Length: 244
Image (tube, rainbow, N blue to C red; front, side, top):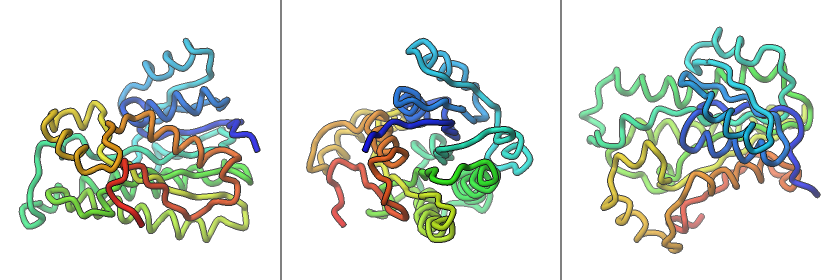
């Protein structure tokens, strides 16, 4: 079975970091990639086109239902990657859960949970049978990393959503799976510094820095035909920190 990815792949939060790597990889595997982001995605599109791929950028806010409906309008979607996340502001602002105020909680949940819900809901009428949805969760769910309870809770919700969506969409059929990245060295995570990276890498069985491209590889597998009988699953890419 080929892992060629045909049709249109929508990647939310595809302008930077892990989202950009996912967009580039899916385009390399044959998809026309639609980068949906509140940030300008033109550099990602340019990188894809320069490499011989096909892509476009659509401005979209995952927390706004009308914005998501407009971003998905007219597309025939074969892959949806719910990658957009509220993460960068949290990297150097760790705090115990009782120090998190309600606004901070809502900011994280509105992007990470409601955003995936609204993007999926807007995309579903345009998703072809046999398509794939891949949700980006986090390996913090497996270890309960301190200082980010709102983030960890939001990514735990994504895993629950993944399994419920997989059950509900099996008769379409649309497959729904998730990836849980470990600490991935991206523009956002670099704010934590090299010392923090070294500490986390030392906990890995495989002491190699996790790059955005490693996460993109997992997404491409779940989006393609080589995983055609996988749904409701969580693919952990953390270098061997957790086994389950």
